[in-house]
Image 1: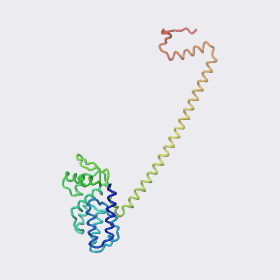
Image 2: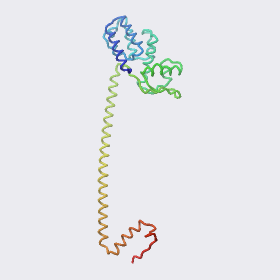
Image 3: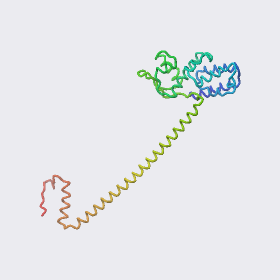
Image 4: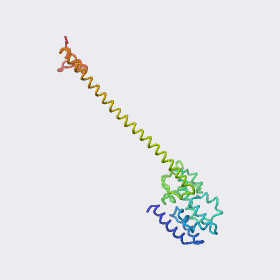
Length: 259
């Protein structure tokens, strides 16, 4: 079972749980969801009316916590940790995994120094163990560790929930890409037409050259046929001599008197 199918099953489970609970019971569901080892998407849970109703209540911090797991990173959490519930180890691990996904959205080559700073990792061995065991093995990213140049080359990364305003940016990016693709297609079509026209020109030119060669041959044949037999024989022989050097006839070098 791939990661997308697993996500769908877990999301469906937590959406149903959140839809039927309120207050502290709903807060516990949020803690469970953000601690789950195989759940990395939270926007559907955020859209549940019961969850949104936590805003302005004594449990509103759990709504903010869920938003942090949907869109935030470990360093962002640390910046407002005093306003949010304290994380348990499973939640810390999850938020660090999500941080790697966020970094991989915009950069396919992640320097070790950046990763170590963003993840609060003190040494390279710890970082590489985290990337291998907690990211690649889990299936949320694929890539290569370059120990010599000290970076992680991302080949695949699971997508995170869209942040507010991100959809508009994505639409603009896709619109620009489509416009560029259309312009490129027009350019390619024009070059194809030009190539086709040049091909037709070459064919026409080649045919004209062949026709002129044939006309020249016919003209030469007519002129030769009008010469006295003695001179026409000499002409044919001269043409033959040009292609035989030295000239041998019947194995002996030959000279001829023409007159």
